[in-house]
Length: 100
Image 1 (tube, rainbow, N blue to C red):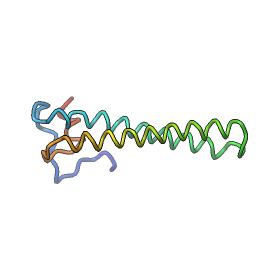
Image 2 (cartoon, rainbow, N blue to C red; image 1 turned 60 degrees about the horizontal axis):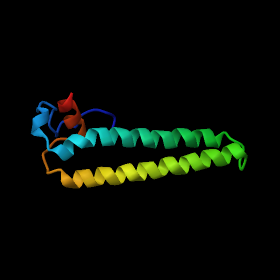
Image 3 (cartoon, one colour; image 1 turned 90 degrees about the vertical axis):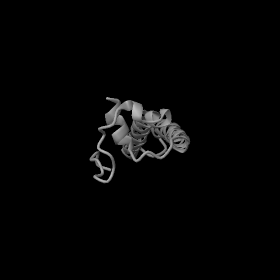
């Protein structure tokens, strides 16, 4: 998404107390997942400019692999949290706004 709220979801006017503990974990986990995915992207762009099979290329490849594993770990955590959260009609962006 582009950071804009879906008009079909709540507007973020609830209080933080209106959300389950699991739902309150999702904004931080989502932000961490987005940062980790950006790290993979940034490293891959660096690797594309690095001579193939050079020592620097292999270092970057290792870093990308570790960062990609982190993305999958965070996605798994987010799935577990999402499964624990009861349906409430709010998006992650809504919850994040209510926590501010």
